Image (cartoon, rainbow, N blue to C red):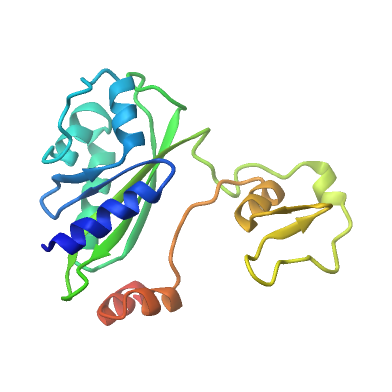
Length: 208
């Protein structure tokens, strides 16, 4: 793996507002952002704890996830390194020993080498959520069912924010408010082709 790939991974995790880290193909933590380190301290770890080189999967296995959930996460991350997928998102119940809400979500993204066709690191983002949302679990409030539909929805031609009354709000927040569901990240085939042109085989496997 190259220093440029590690530099890219570090920049990416530090650009995220939530707790995030990058692991190599052996599952060792290559970099962790400040929110991740702060959460570790709040959970009882020493301020001098060295995250770099720590086995991420072993830590999750011992402290966080039950065996069946751990198997899902491990297989998902390994499949990214094998280029069988480029992203993953999973929701898991939080153990009582950790601070935060009752559920948390893990999202994983491939971080490729810039000079050769291989995945150097996988970025893992953790965030706590109120529940394991199911878009079909809860019916929307009655007032939304009876509301007259809008014929036109004002969308900013530049940033794609949506105008709601006198306020412009991000499209993700608008959908969350209107659909009453949690959103997660994924990546469409067109964006995969643009962002990862060196992995044409991944598109075929995702299509399958």
